[in-house]
Length: 150
Image (tube, rainbow, N blue to C red):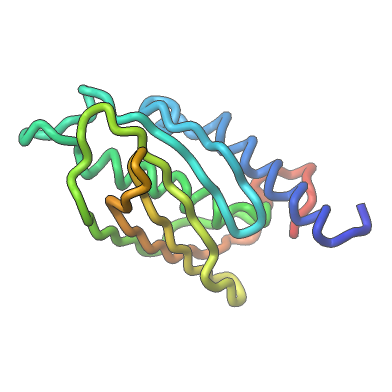
């Protein structure tokens, strides 16, 4: 695998498979990781009744978790284990029960071991309902030992 782009994509796919298989919180919430590329991830979640808050709308914690799963997949897409250092979210609109949410995350910056990632969560109508920014720190080891590191 001499081509650097092929190596980077192979690293992203291996890390993405690992996250899809081993993230138990994501599985519990029904989050499906749909795509992982170097510095990018996308996932989907349907807001269920058991994800409601006391106001009867989608719980912000569930929306945050969807964004956090995408953040984790994007910042680990180079197959270098990265952990959250800081995350914040801005809720733009309420989420209704039954909404199909999609979160897309992109790497804004990766300098040394520190990364910055922006995630947009949108509903089935394409309306942005939340903006999430995560700062990550690579800790040195690969996510998947026998996969390429980009």
